[in-house]
Amino acid sequence: MATSAAIFRAKTNFMKSWRPRNPPSNRDRLELYALHKQSVSGDAPTNVPSPESISVADKAKLSAWLSKRGMIQGDAMARYVEECDRQVNVYGTRDNHGPSSPPRSPMHQNQNQQASSANTTSETTTTRGGEPSASHSAQQQQQQRQPNSSNATTPINSQYDTPPNTPMRRRGKNEESSVLLCPRGLAAIPLLCAAASESRSAYLARLQVTHPSNGWWAKQEPLCLEVNNPLSIPEKLIIALAAHVEQISLVVSNYMGEGHAVSIMSPRVLQAFLWPIHNVFLCCWISLILTTTYLGSMVIMCQTLLFGAKRTNAPLASLFVEEVHPAARAVESMCEEHQVIGVRVAGLALMPMMMLCDFTTSVVGRVGILVGSLVFVGMGVCSWWYWICVLPWLAVCGLCLAVMSGWCFGLIELAGN
Image (cartoon, rainbow, N blue to C red; front, side, top):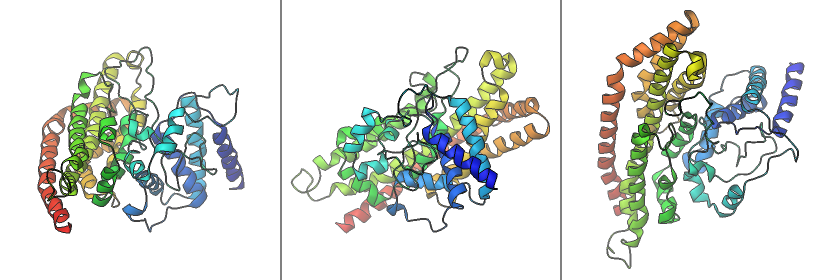
């Protein structure tokens, strides 16, 4: 154990001064964080703070740590060292001609000066468990360096805080940009789940300090596919609809309340009505990200089986490691007891995907990668109706329930006035 601890300390010191050539994904950053916390502090505390007492990013950080619960500290140290070596190989090392710690970008410096505590809660939503700086909201997270962090490239706010997303990975020369997925989709899920847990009071307080031109949804963009890819239209549609709902919530203060056209009713009534719709859009976005990842992996796997890995630049083993297995674990995390009801229902709807991914992964381990890939593609084709028909229908039902429950929250707010 002494040798393992010495190696762990040496690797931790190395990661503090490591300057990657390409920014690590949020999923990888959070994996390092969780393994480091498990190695140093052991299991995460069971007395989880109330949602109002910690920020959105803190919840995602705590969720990552909780995922390692039960792991022996010695094993966590070994896993941490292995993960560090893997990330150094994947992301490379930048030529270091300056200080060991990377400089802050002007954007982050300005954001640290301007970000308010209310906006920070909602605008840090696109992380871990997840992957690039695709979403502007994740880039607007307040960034402070923690001395005991396991990675110097991971600015953090507090004990459980989460790093911002990293940029979209660059595609290889032989890679089909119209097919391969960006890694930021899966990376965004933990923070999106945390954002969906925003309470009604926190949501209303955030709207009061947010300018109509600075809405959170208006800053989002597709996370799974390129923005100009036609297949990203469903994702852009969800973002556009949610942005319009948010815009209504922000501008209603100019027309309702004392001194305005509708003086008998507070704007908080309409905002409370729209709050569950906002949360359902978040759950729909999470579900769409996972469904797109699953179907995209199936398409790429089919292409690799037909044309070979050299042609597609997507080895079958890499697809299982980087897409299939993480997607299954993301669905599993959505069903954990600390998630809000909307996220857990979305995870329940996506449970067939987790079962298919886990089954084909077991086939790969027992029979081989080729047979496992054929089973994955075959089961995906046979279940097309669920992803194309059932899930959209469930999303529509969710929106209808959000509208009906919105009336209840609006009446509660009206009675409170």
